[in-house]
Image (cartoon, rainbow, N blue to C red; front, side, top):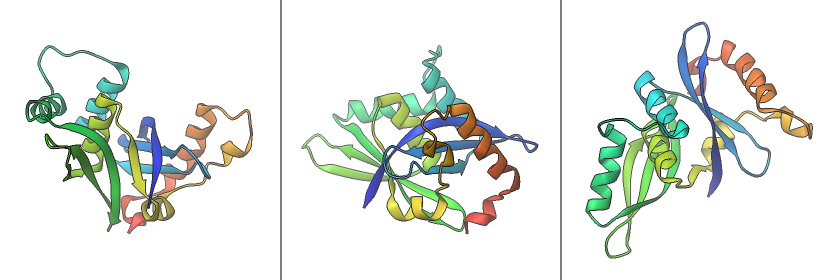
Length: 165
């Protein structure tokens, strides 16, 4: 079973300056799922979120152009598993004969593609159960994104990637 997620953003964990992709459940408890990612992937997601145009296609744009040239389209991405602190994902494509094709991907690349196409971001319920952090700010009707980020930042100050294994 999967749950729909939304991209909260990519934040920098201090003092290590490590980028962290933050997804949030759109329903239910509103749990946050932090995923440590690389700098290039953080930049690619940020460019897509901000709508920044680049002179030459980035790798994610090239991949989407390739999918389109094969008469296919990205229909969703799924954060499917968490093993030894590593998140696994898949791209769900609709092929030219309307068949569904799944392609393995890194979670950060999957999200970078989803943002570019406004495709749904889904996560296996087991992944959200294991890595999700209950967003206590959601219990307050007036909570702001900054309050959520501050709470997550406090968590990230003490967490290490190995804590997810």
